[in-house]
Length: 254
Image (tube, rainbow, N blue to C red; front, side):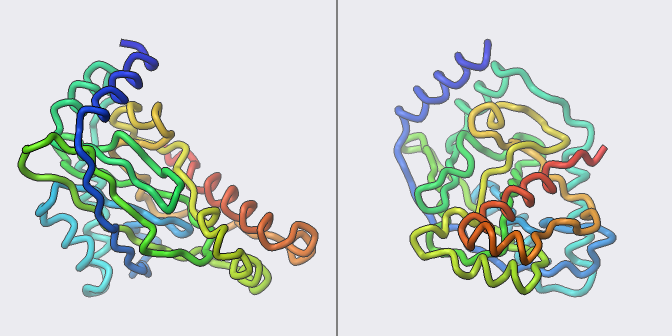
């Protein structure tokens, strides 16, 4: 099965299912020890998707406010879930999607951040990093849209961690001036990552279906000069910062 066939079959499968929508809770996250590991890299809105009722989502929530080191320990556990996994064929990925009672689309307002996603068997967890420039968000606009088999039991659930990027005063002033009608520009879809289990979702909407790059972040080298911000203006500066965040998140952890 080639890419185009897989995408068409996924689209056909979506048409056969009913829709269920739920709000994705966003939790502010400050790592306890970034040098040892993080649940969400700086400059990201990292979404965790699991089967509804799976305790892993509550563990993520608890780790953000638990004792020092709880988030480091959980990040290591999650990374271990995906060690040794290999890339899957389009055919196998499609069979898994079709067998899932629910697969999902993640949206922020009118922007689609990911589609055709579901927790892969084994880890039963999906971690999706979305580049974030530190600007204002409307939390109520983050939505999990399930494509659910009519009458099937179970479903999916998601939570998101917001890890603010370090910003200069000029950068902060620029992103805060983005108008309400343009807040969707403060978050983007993730274009690439390491440790892909399958590129099925990546082929559809440019995200990995399994493992976020949860290694310790590199030294921060993302910034715009005050002169550059003045030249670009607030909206263009916000877009530039988001593109820089996307590049930083997309680095090779090998």
